[in-house]
Structures are given as structure tokens and as C-alpha cells.
Length: 515
Image 1 (cartoon, rainbow, N blue to C red):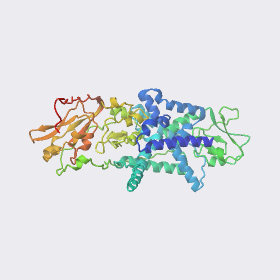
Image 2: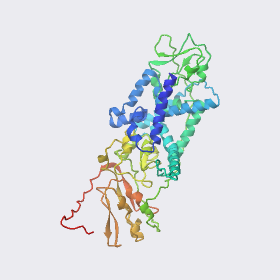
Image 3: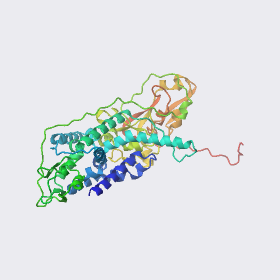
Image 4: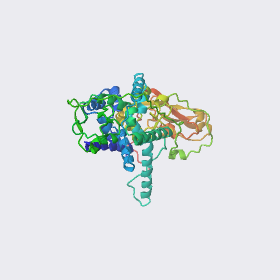
């Protein structure tokens, strides 16, 4: 049973890592639904959001738990597998023994209650911070993916020197400081917990673990200590990462058992069985009480926007005057398909899969742009990049329903915001310099250059009806320190009109070509 559990765990663990580290930006859209279907909190939020069969994964998980115990925690949850790997490596280096401990009952149910109460009041902050899948995703996206891009680019440049171009370099937009610091701190916390105390996070902090633990107390199949075969050696308790086997009284706390089956591998007398719970010789499950509390603090860093590579068009424009009028941004811009900021923040778990899947890297973890309770939820960062007009990557991979699926045509009409022009910041007026970078990069031609008699130069003119808020104009604008054109967010996404199709002038067949 342990071998089967390990194989299933590695399949989920590695497939999710591959999704986050895929540099071709294709696997996320095509295959993300398979390993993420059973991730509990994203599935639950998706079911609430769209109410289709695509969101019933959490129901299947609860049924599996009622039948077999905490199979989700042992095999499906990637953070659980990560903790097992950390514990295993530690035990390989130095043999450690786990001892039976009473559960942190008030602590674990306190975290669960806090997350549920906040969610009832429309605040998903508790789920965002504590969801095991989303925390694992943030670790991979913010810590491991930048390193992967760096390795890829190093290999690409090395091969390029010998005229091999099978691997191409990727543009790197820099590390998001808030996401990096939070992920690094959580990684340190989870490593300390796993190395010292096994599955302590799962059984004292994680709301999913607490809920499934409550269900598993009544599961139909459980691990049973055999009265006949057990020799009382205590070996099983020393390898129990959940510290839930009381070898003295021969009792197992099923609410904390994560079905790792380590106890089976060390038992010298076949004293353990996995069988139907309500056998006549089944021991009574205890519910120990402990008044100890465990709290952890999450530290955040001040938002810092990383540098990005300049467009070639910008390199030709010399900006020598700094402007003085800052942009007025009331709201962050939420991703296409999120419908509104409220809908997005209510359902997003900040797993950062959309951040990893975004080919232009315009999606970045937020700091306080959505408010304190929306920390780390992705936002459109037009300083770093822009949204491809026909790209639907983020809408295809979201596991929680915070970003709803869109096809290419419907996505082109979603108006995330509207371009706003600050005349005094534009170098056409402040320097008398020809520019037009914003109009050149606008995919709908919502920004056009028209002659302004005041300066006798072409200046931007915005058609808000066909603007989709993709941010190409803002990203291309070379002005410093503030942008002359930027996107004002629509808190509720609107529908843009289709750009007018200009008829091409038909050549006169009677005329000869001028050359």
C-alpha cells in the first residue's frame, strides 16, 4: 500500500511542478485540469463560481475521505508530498523518532473556523493564506520558476555560441518581491515543521486537513492495531509523521492519520491491518484535548516593481525631462475573465498558476493593490508587460473559477479598463519630441496619433469604446517617472466595441504600377 501511495503522490507532485515550470506556455492550458481537478479549495471555489461538473473535485475528495481516510493529504496534495520528501531526506541523514502527541485541537479548529467565518463574510483571505495547494504553487512560481528561466537562458546563450538554436532564451521580468518574501518565509516554516514535527502543518494549521480529519474519524476503512499480532514494540509510533499512534494504549487518532503507511513498513509482527472500520475488534478512537495554541505570523515586504526590458521603439526616443503628474489609480486591474474585482478576490486562492502560464508575464502577485485581504492575488502589472490581445492562457488554467474560461473572440471584447491620457506628461508636449509608441502598440487602434495644431505634432487620441485595457500603450510609453498614458481599471469588466474595419483602397486595374 505504501508503494501505491508513493507512486500516486509523485504523479500529482511532479505533474503540478511541471505545470508551473513549463517554459513553452502550452502544457498549462492543455493539461492543468487533470492534476488540479481534485485540489480541494480551488475545486470548492470553482463549484461556487460556476456550479458545473468541473468543480466537483472537492466532493469526490470528501467521498474518498469518508471511504478510506485522508487519501487527499497522503497522495493528492502536493504540499503534503513535499513535507514527506523533506521528512524522508532528514531521516536519511539523521535518524529521528516521532513520539505520540495529543492534537492541537483548539489551534486546528481555530484556523478552520477563522477561514470559514471570513469566507462567509465574503473574504477569501484565510483560504488564500492557508490553502496547501496554493502555498505550494507560490513556492514553485516565485522561487523555483525564476531559477528555471535563468538556467534555460544560460543554456540557450551557451548553445548559441556554437550556432545551436534549439533552445531559445526567455525574457525575464524580474522577481516579485512580495511574492518572493512570502513564499520564502512559508518555505522556511514548512521545512522546519516537517523536519522537526512531520505533518504538524497538516494537523494544526491547514483548514483542509482539519476538515478532512473530522470526516476521517468516521471513514469506513482505517488502519487497525491487531490485538492478536501486535507485539507492543512501539516501532509504528516512532515513524508516524502525524504523531497519532499511541503505542502504550494501542489507539490511533484517525482524525490526524494521513495514510502514509510508514507504520506498515516497520511493523515486525504484522500487527497492523487496513480494513473495514466497524469490525468487532476495532479499538475505540480517542479524541485527546490540548489547550496549547500555535500561531504563526506572515511578514510582508513593501511592494517593489522589478525592472523590465525596454521595447526597441523606446530605445530610439530620448527622454530628458521628468514629468510631475502621477497616475491616479483607484483600483488594480484584474485578469480577463474574472468579471470583476469583487468576483476575482472572492474566488482566487493566489495559487499563481496563471502567473506561471502568462507568456508576457503581465500577471504579477499583488501586494496591497487589492487591499490587505487580497495580498498576493495576481493583478495586471502594465509597468512590467502587457496582455496579448488574443491570449487566453490565464482563463484556461485557473482551477478555482476566479478566472472563467474564454475563447479568443470573447476575450478580445473584454474591457479590463480604459486608457487615460495625461497631456502634460507626454513628451510630445513637454519636449516637443515625436513619439507615437502608444499608438504603434495598441492592438485595437483605440489610441491613434492625430495632428495637434498647438505643437504642430501628432499626439495621442483615445477611443474609449474600443479600448480593451490590455496595457500595451502604458507599457510602451517611455515617459519618466510617471506614464503619460495608463490604464484605469474597470472594477466591473465591461464589453468593448469591435474596432472599425477600414476598407482597403482597391487599385485601378487600368493603371500601371508606378515602378
